[in-house]
Amino acid sequence: MDSNVLDENLFERTKALLEPGDIELNGVIVHTDVGSDQEAQLHQTTLDIGEIIATHADKGETYVFSGNDDPEFGLNQHQGLTIAGDEFVWECQQLLRDGTFKVVFYYESNADQEAIVRDIEAEDVRVTSVEGD
Picture 1 (cartoon, rainbow, N blue to C red):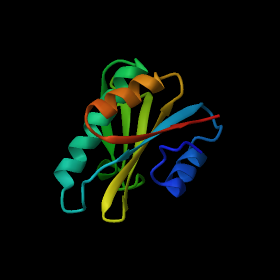
Picture 2: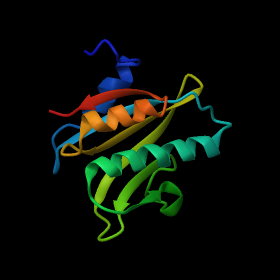
Picture 3: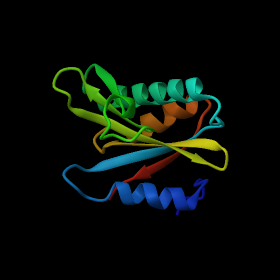
């Protein structure tokens, strides 16, 4: 376990999401100070982090598909998809824990993990890197 892990239970749950499937995944946990009464700020943070991931995934221009767009998709769940072909770039879940949101993002493991973490940290946001196997 990395000594920089802020929430061991959330780290383990995120790691389980990355278990081998059709594609190999990595992820990050973004630890915000945003509460449930700051929906606009949470939305902007999600978009900003999604853009960082999309940049380092190198898949071209993307858009965000949200739970609000489809009743089969969770309300606090969002995906970054390519404009050309609706290809998966990233997905996230916004989780309210102890009064603030933790946003779990996951994406294909060929995205530059170190650059993603570095750029999120440059936004003055606490982040935990979670790499798949």
